[in-house]
Image 1 (cartoon, rainbow, N blue to C red):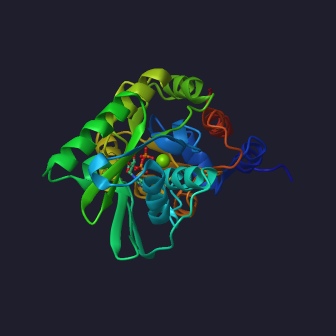
Image 2: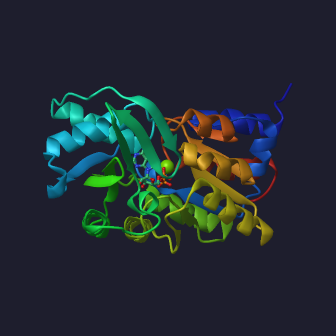
Length: 299
Ligand code: ADP
Ligand code: MG
C-alpha cells in the first residue's frame, strides 16, 4: 500500500530530526500563521556559562564561597542556568554543600536550606518584586542591571532574605537562529515574537541579533500563556517553540507546540506536539513546509 501523505511526512520529519507525535499534529503544523519563540535554550544553545561572579562586600563572602552557595541551591534544578552555576563551581574545584528543602519556581528561581540558612537564587526582579528595601538590595540591583546591559542574564543570590551577590550568565546564540526566524517570518507572513523570562535588556539585545521586533521579557509561565491566548483571540494559529518547564503551559495553550529535545525539560517534551531531537532550530520551517506539501498546498 502507498503510505498516506501525512504519515510519509512524519517519516520525513523524522529524517530531519523532528519527532512529530501524530498525524493530526503533522497536519496542524502546516496551518500555523504566527510563531512565538522562547529565548534561553531555544534561540540560544542552552549551555550557558557563568561569566561573572560578584559577592557583595557586606556579605563577607568570597566570590568562590558565593558560587558554592549558589551551586548548592541549584544542585537539584534541571534549568540550564542551574547547570551553568553547578558546572562553574565544579570547574573551580569548590565544595558544594548539601541542602535540604529544595524548591523551584518556574520563571523565578530556586530556594533551599544550606545548613540553617535559606538560600535563594533567581531573577533579581522576581526576588525583589516589592522593590529594593535597603542598601544591599539597591547595590545588587545596580550590578544586575549592568550585567543585563552587557547582554548577560543576571541572577541574584540571597541568604535569609538578604542579597549576598550576583552572578552573570551568558549563552551563545544558535548558529541557525537568525536564518530560522527569517524563514518562519516568510512562511507564516507574520513577524515572529520572543517570549522570555529573562531581563528586558538581555532579551532586546538578542532579539536585535536574530531580527525579532516583538519582544516580551520578564514573563512568568502564565504570562507566556496570556501572550499566546492574545494571539489566538486575534485569530492566529500560533506555533510556540520552547524548552523549559516554564514553557510547558504555553506549549499546551498554543495551536501547535514544539520542544527542543536535547536540553529540554521532561515536562516540555511531554507537553509539546513535536520534539526537535537533532537540536537544529532550522528544522522547524522544513517541517512546516513538509506539512503543507502533504496537505497538497503549495509552499
Ligand atoms: P527563558 O524564558 O528565557 O527560557 P526562564 O523563564 O526559564 O527563561 O527564566 C527566567 C528567569 O528566571 C531567568 O532569566 C532567571 O533570572 C530566573 N530563573 C529561572 N530559573 C532559575 C534557576 N534555576 N536559577 C536561577 N535563575 C532562574
Ligand atoms: Mg527556555
